[in-house]
Structure formats: C-alpha cells, structure tokens
Length: 323
Image 1 (cartoon, rainbow, N blue to C red):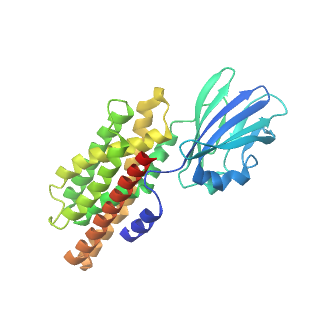
Image 2 (cartoon, rainbow, N blue to C red):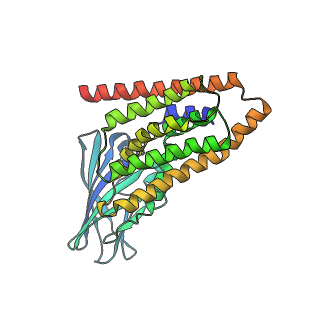
Image 3 (spheres, rainbow, N blue to C red):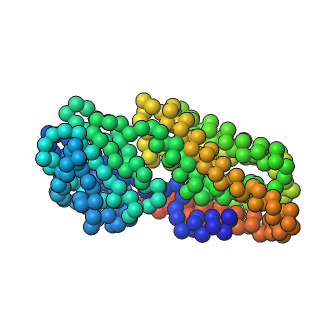
C-alpha cells in the first residue's frame, strides 16, 4: 500500500481536485456562459469548447458559439460562450464530455441565473448535468467526502503511519476514532464560520504531523495510548478538510446538511481504506514479514513523505508571497 501511495503522492498534488467556475445566464432562448478554468486544465479543453458542452431545451439542441477567451488572474483562463435555443422551455446543460479530459475529482461550480432568480449548481463526473431553476442535490457532498480522503494522499499516509506499529484491535480503533472525532470538530468549526486558521499554516502543519508520526514509530512498540497524539493532530487535519470543502463551495443555507454528508463521506472513505489494510498488516506480522526492521524502513518512508510535503508547501508559500 505504501509503495502505491508514494507513487501517487509524488505525482499528484494534495488537496487539489480541479475546480472550474461558471456563470450561466438564461434569458428567453439565449444561454450566455462565462467560464473559468485553472490554466493547466484549460489547455486540455481549449480545443473542445464550445462543442463539448451540450445545451438542450426540452431535448432539442441549442447550438453554441465562442464569444472570446482570455487569461485571468490567479492562474486561470476564461471563456465567454453563447448557446441559442430554438424555443423557450426547460434548459439543461451537460458537461460530461469535458470530465475525461480534466483531473480526477474535478468539480464545476456554477451559478444558474434566470429572470426569476438564481441557484447554485455543481457538476462532476457521474453527475455532469444541471437544469436551470433546479438546485444540485446536496447528496453529492457525500461522494465529495469519499473522493477527498481517497485522493488526499497526505491524510492516508498519516493514517498508515499511525497503524503501522500495530497493537490490539481496541487500541487501533481508539486511534482512528480519536482522529475522526477531532477532525469532525474542527471541520464543523471552520465550515460553520466559527473560526479557522489560514491554510498557509494548516497545510505545512499537516505535513509536519506526518513526519512526526513516522519518527515516533521508532520509539513506540504499539498503538496503545497513541490516541493522545492522534486527537490534536486530527484537529489540524480537520481544518485541512474544511479548506478543501470551501474550495468546492457550499450552499450556506444548507451548511449543516452539507457538513454532515461530507464528514460521513470522509469516514466512509477511511473505512474503505482501513478495512483491507488492517488485516493485511496483521497477516504480514503473523508471517514475520513485518518485523522491527521492516517497520522502521516503512516509517522512514513516512517521514520522508512528510518532509517532502513540508518543504513543497513552505516553498509554495514563499513563491506566492514573492509573486
């Protein structure tokens, strides 16, 4: 498992499932779109706009045309598109053809505006369409939570480092439970607007927590009482989860429901990972293949990944400050 995590972690940025944003305005038979993608993803779809976006009214196609595009601040690229429908009716936008060209977990966050009001909408692979006047179901945030932990390689390495030392099942469950309860508290605190530290502080601290767990593995024999350090580190990771959720954006009037679903998704994702990993580690210990030397070697990898992310994030902050 760790070898897979290392390969994935070094080839993909943490906490950065792609986000694109759009304003979709329906007026009579005309749909005007102002869309912004991050520049690295914009290059992958530039040749496919507007053709890859399918707009229909009651099932009839609304042909599209480009009105111009330009680079925008914060490393983005914007397009202006117009779709003209043959008649007025129920208008649906389908973005499914774009997602295979975008990063895993990409989310398109939109504002669908009609003369009667506006709604927040979201599209992603597997749920790639929306209709004007219909708000995206908040149930989608359950899947976002699952995806975030499955693609949050730093969180997975942290959990792996914690359970690597082994111990009684009750002790391992106490470690995971402490982490869960702690990050749930700070996730709620941040999402509900009570308080949240800046991500510039949170992300390096998450990396430092990973390195610390790897170092501590050299001095502990099992997971007994390890929940005492898992809990405070879980508070930090919770703010990291909140940062990812804020990037996706949430409807403020449904924040408690979104928070619950996202958190349940994170826990489900953890279970999907831990359910097979814990028995495998137990089997390796029983076979004698995960002795002290092997455990120390794997712990060194955990330390190295933590330090790698720490340096990467600090240098990123320095570069942003310099820019």
